[in-house]
Length: 273
Length: 286
Image (cartoon, rainbow over the protein chains, first blue to last red):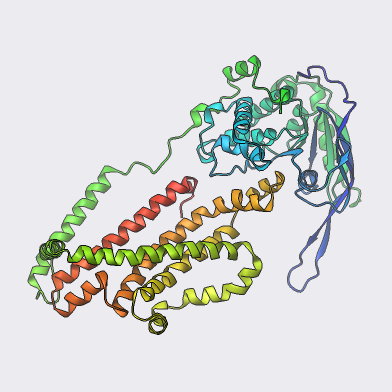
């Protein structure tokens, strides 16, 4: 339990001067356009820390997360994990997608086992680990169910368990709760904090929900668009363990931070000015 | 994996007790097709009886040379089963059908996987596949006879050539249409090329293959009958020709109805297999 966390002194994940440009294929007869999506992005995430990336749509926050995972190639810059440069996809990072993306032909437990199976872990320890993770996300009862038999919230829990199963150094979460209804979202946010307290995972979290960013994070990185860049990094002024979100919303400091983030997001981008 | 992933402590249990994990148990739905309404069954039964009675009544008015009726067909069927003629013809046809369908399934799925997976293979063969699929392949039977003669291999070839295309095309489509998000999961877990194929692409395209097989069965039956008409006359096709030539219309109906039953049964069987192998597709439908 990391009840009273101080600023982490060990850097787990470092994103150094990352840039990315997409080539947008033009309509017939037109030239291809170059779309800069990320420009000189640098930040770090400390061990055990939860950092959120927020920003208007199109600011490249999801692209950034996918670059860290190795799903998208970067044009320039470096990603370091525990000080080592990583390139390409890796089993040291766990990814939770916006949609659960479970394999429909596998049971819940089969989906959780997937990562370990791909790593060649033998069936028995694999199953044991998956059972432990299902218990962690509160879904032991659903082990034999298929994804289409589960609600969206349950599917996303499985998605989280699947990412955690490979015991990744960092957990990357791409708007994982955005497709859920408000109540389920709040339940899962609370669950995530509990799971974080139990596992001590380092988490990089992408969201467009400002309340969610404040509630879940140690620090929030606000990004701007065209091209995507970091506008500010804000520490969250609330202690751990966090009070429930509805209570937190009543705090003046919450409102102040929220307003500040909103200001930053709405501020005209430097490029346009 | 050790300490950090230990199971939930007492706290977790307490949390689920006061409702944190509330969306767990009650959401588990009953699945499977909706219960078929009793009313529809009765309507269907009445319809079947009505058609049979009307057929019987009308059929009796018409010269038995041109048309027959259920009781006459039934009598003919019993005679043909007693003499062993129907069973022998049926087994003969079934042999051609099953072997041909098997060859079509194996090679269709194999070629379909290659076409779906490799752009080069697709570009090299798609025009040929499309052209052959569009050709009424019955037209090449004289050629098949030149190549294979009138025997078993000619029949087999006709069944295969008719059944293979829907299997091949659906399999290729299945491989091409694996949802990108699922492949992303594979990439995120750093799956090897081989793992990507066996653990993602292959299972994801299974429902398409099953659809291809179901469509292929129908065409295989057509191929079988056509082959029995136009090459050495054997099996159920031979019975139709024989009783047609004898102007025994009631007896001619027996192999026709047998073929109908065979088609219905095999297609239903494939459908069963389809929803058994890919139960998640039930909710999507096809």
